Amino acid sequence: MRLKRAVLLFSSLAAAFGYACTRVEPAGAPPEVAIGDAGFGGEAAGGSGSLAGEGGDGHGDTSVTVGGAPGSVELGLWPTFAPEQEQGTEAEAVLASIAALSLGSGTLPVYERWDTLSGATGAPRAMAWSLLDDLVAPYRERNRALALCIGVVDRTVPAWPMTGEVNSVAARLAMERTIDEAFARYAEQLSHLCFGYEVDRYLASVSEPEGERVLELLEHAVGYARAHPLKSPRTALGVAITMMAASDAAQLEALALGDEVVTVYDPLDEEGELRAPESIAADLEAVLEALPRGQGDQALPLTLFEAGYPSSADAGSSETAQRAFYETLFGALELHVDRVGFVGMFGLGDRAESICAAEAISFAASEEARAAARCTIGLRAKSGSAKAAWPSVLSALSRSR
Image (cartoon, rainbow, N blue to C red; front, side):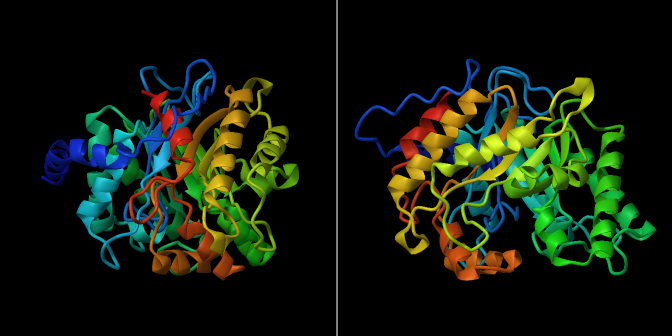
């Protein structure tokens, strides 16, 4: 019934919402953004702090193998936005998802804390899974995909639902039940399933024994998912870490547990200062250099699950700097199209200050700067007007159709 309602909502509102998101015309023709000969697969999303959730297999007209086929990169747009009410509504969440889809996003990237999805025994929390069902429905109808990351930790904050040791038998059984639920609902849509979120931040904030217990559970989760009878061969598995950790071969040795290395880009450095927008190219090169070898002595593919850049002066940035970030990112991807499987652009619209402030706490440092950055990281302002980076991103998304 919920799926039917979501599909009906999509049918009645998709055209109007797509027009609302694309009616802003750039002053000139959008710049050409060629990301390899095959273009982008595409993906859309929910997102930490968005109504689509905290924190598939994307494809345009070609199929995608594990981690993204050589010669193509999945490109998605997180449907972030500022809700009209403090908590927002389910309809607003679905509309944001539809908006990203209408712009050419072929995969829905979603990050959810584990304790949001599941209770202490792994029993599904009905409301959280029902909302996710509604968000996925339009993508399923269009034969599009889902990239889901389950937050065992939420950066520096524990996110497991049970009490007691995180590597206990009870915890493992609860994780297995959560994975069962994900595959039962979305096996055909899942192109990426990761566990995290930014695990290295948590490991740096706790004792070594506590960190080892978390790693044991993550390793069990990846192993259980890999052997799951419902898992599609096209579903890539990984553990979500920061790009900084991914550029460190020593950290990667412990954290590269799956079929791909899943990273989250942070536009702020360790001191809370905004990075130069062009630095994404060097950051990407550093990560690719550090990637460990997998089967056949080939480096594991890389996923940028979340990548974005703020636009406001409060964050020390501007719309011009945000545009430079995306243009630099697209240029760097073009050089490594065969090594990057997925990029989730964060995100469609700016978000409410209260949401960003609450989210910034999980970073445990530079909270004020973090909130300012994450609240203006969207490609459209709260008023709905497009920012300077919009034409470049829209051009890239259009190549995934």
